[in-house]
Length: 319
Ligand code: NAD
Ligand code: UDP
Image (cartoon, rainbow, N blue to C red; front, side):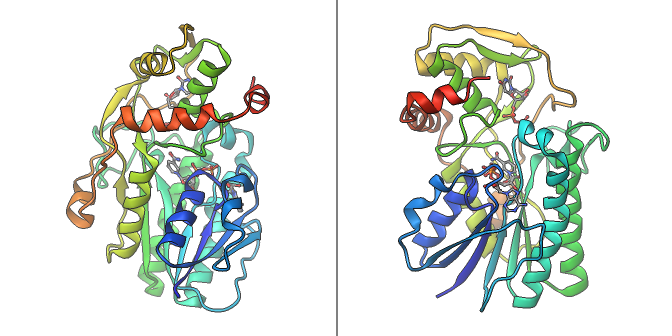
C-alpha cells in the first residue's frame, strides 16, 4: 500500500485530498496543528485503519516513522484575514515548514508536491496569468507575508529538485471553493453566503470591478492528483478560467440564495489584486486536465453545504 503524508489535512483542500487518496487506496498520514483547520473535516476518516492523524506544527522538526512514498504540503493559512492575523506563522510555515518537509522527502526518497498559489503573481500586469509570468508582488505590503512565503517555497523546492535531484511538483492554485470552507474565513464566497444566510447586506470591497476566477473543489483536487502522478517538475496553474467581477458575483449570490439584502461597498484592502484569471494551457497539455464543474452547479452545492450549518454556528461568525 502506498503511503502519503498530507500537511494541512484538517483544512479545506487538505481534507478533500485525504478523501481522494483514501479512495485511491493509499495509507494517509494527516498532519495539522489546527491553527485554521477543523478536525470535523476529517473525523469521518478516523475509524479507518489506513488513516492516521498527527497533531503537529510543521515549522518544528517533522518525523514520520517507516516508509513514505509521497508528501503533499498544504499547511498554510490561505485566507487574507487569516494570514494578516498570523503573519509570522504564515512566513514560517511557507519557509521553515517547507524546508522541513523537503528534508523529510529527501530522507524518505518520497515525491513531494507543494501548494503554491496565484498570489505569487501578486497584482498581475499580465492577463491571463501564464506560468512564465514572474509576478508583481509588494514584498513589504501586508499580503507580502503570504505571497513571499509562497515564492520562497517555490524557490527552495526547485533548489531541492536541482541540487538534490528530489522529485518535486508545484501546483499554483487559483481561488477554489466548495464544501468545508470555513464560514468565517473571510474569503469572498463564505463571506457572501454567510451574510445572505444571516440576513445581512453583502459587503463588496472597493467598487467591485476587481475580478477572480473560481474553481470548484472537485476539479481542483483532480488537477492536483494528476500533477502529482505526472513527471512534470515545473509549476502548473490549476484553476477555472471563467472570470467574473466581484460586483457581478455578489449579484449572482443574491439570486442563488434568494436573499432580499443588497450590496454595500467597503474599502478595498491594500494590494488586493485587480484581476486574476489562470491560463491553463499547460494543465490541458501536460495533464489532460480542465475544469468540468460550472459556477452555477458548484455554487449551488456550496450553498447547500452552508445551509446545513446550524444557526449557532452561523451566529458565531458575525463580525
Ligand atoms: P485552510 O486554512 O482551510 O487549510 C490550511 C490548513 O493548514 C489548516 O488546517 C491549518 O490548521 C493548517 N496549518 C497551518 N499552519 C500549519 C502548521 N504550521 N503546521 C501544521 N498545520 C498547519 O486553507 P486551504 O484553502 O485548504 O488551503 C490549503 C493550501 O492551499 C494552503 O497552502 C494554501 O496556501 C493553498 N491555496 C489554497 C487556495 C484556495 O483557494 N483554497 C488558493 C491558493 C493556494
Ligand atoms: N471580497 C469582497 N467582500 C468580502 C470578501 C472579499 O468584496 O466580504 C473581495 C476581495 O477584496 C477580493 C475578492 O473578493 O477582491 C476575493 O477575495 P478572497 O479573500 O476570497 O480571495 P483573494 O483576494 O485571495 O483572491
